[in-house]
Length: 265
Image (cartoon, rainbow, N blue to C red; front, side, top):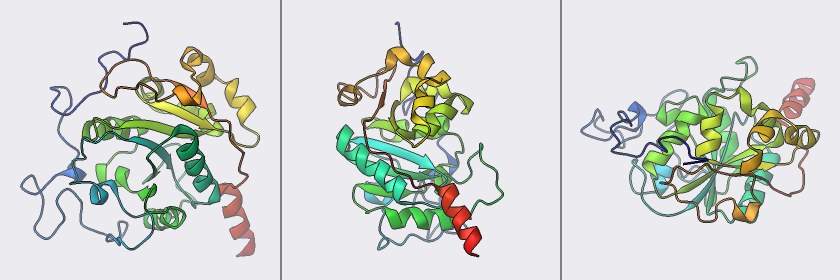
């Protein structure tokens, strides 16, 4: 079929899907006594859950069990290092909720971004805590899904999320700077084919991003924001669309915040 994504998303039960990620095993499948099924024990870099903390209501806590569910929802995924999380991240989440009619936005805090140096990267627990502070715990949720799944690459994270939430419609939220960098991501065409992309303007990046390689390759799949998720069937192999959201730019930058903290130290 023209514009299809090959074999389409791998769903649970597919002979090609492979075993579940170790971090999401349930009791009786390698779980240990005294540990919540499907969730690893808290460690130095993975603090024990504190459900009173804003934004820490993980999908595994909020939803029935660690294997996901079959509810129909529209979920925006905003991934990043959150080093640190800041008002610009919250701005992106709120704009996406409003302009795409999403039910939730998950702030996916990366255990380690393969494209970013480790030097200057705060510990994972510290970055997760920063993301919780800007989340509201209801529609904007700070989650450590990638740490629990054991994934480092977005394509792998998306594949496992589709398997566990087969009726959810996911949209990947990107700043314009990340649209420019998208061709550097592992299996980036697979990501764009199987998952809708919503691009938010960033000061100094938007015009360059729209003239870049990713925008050129995906030009025929560009959609109006209102049509990005309309009629989307998570089980179909049709190529996903992408859209630039018309939204106010936000000047906050994690790089600038770190530089200001270093000067003040």
